[in-house]
Image (cartoon, rainbow, N blue to C red):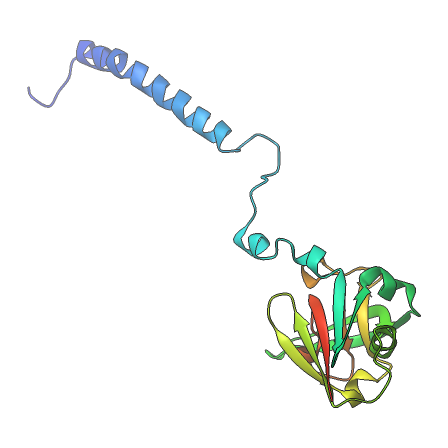
Length: 187
């Protein structure tokens, strides 16, 4: 009968494919180990989002303050050495989500004074490392609850926010600029 096999045929079949099954098992195990599976070590490859932020944190350690022909730089270390304030504020995102945190940092007015900005202006053009630009009026910039924050809930800001971010407690989220590299005064 064509469809039935004898024990002898089955036994021969098993012996014939056994080396292939063993080879397949060894190959799969080798691939798994060389791909990092089971190695116990974290991957050192960066995610695309991490690649995009490579160098950002370091680039944001200095903030250029431009006021006409005057160009000054304020470092994050200097900002952290200025008078500190802390308060609870609600970040209102454009999608309607809100998040309440306790923010700590230096009033923007003090940072601007340290950067040589000592008189009234129309607005600030705040530029982020990723190219985002926000505009902040004089009235908002001078409020005591508008700060360059470097602490959130008692801890340093998340690294992907940059070492400091603008927090304008009385304003919606688009004023809360992160990864700041430059503040330009417009008169």
